[in-house]
Image (cartoon, rainbow, N blue to C red):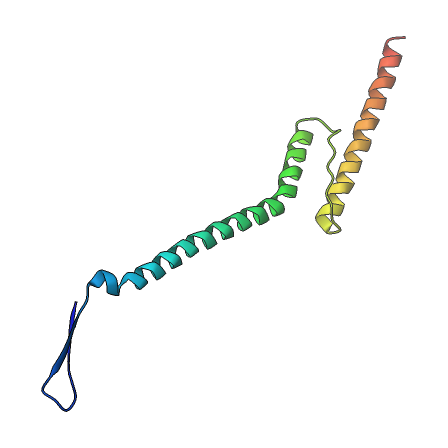
Length: 118
């Protein structure tokens, strides 16, 4: 790269010459640092988002698994939902009622078995 500029008050010119690689060396370093930093920040954001998403969806997955088990006929599955919102209260109430129903059915089956096998 060549640069030329006239010196004031004279008919002289100042000419400078430098290699572009030397001139842009700092720009390349800064670009590399910025790109590397961006990649690291994106990786950290991705890990943090994955952790947050897993924390949010874990109770939903547990409840879904329990519901699938109960709909398969296993009424003894414990559905415990922590919290004080409507979903938690309702889910815990339903779980308790299912346990009572399953226990009542087991008692009725036992009574029928005792009556039939006398």
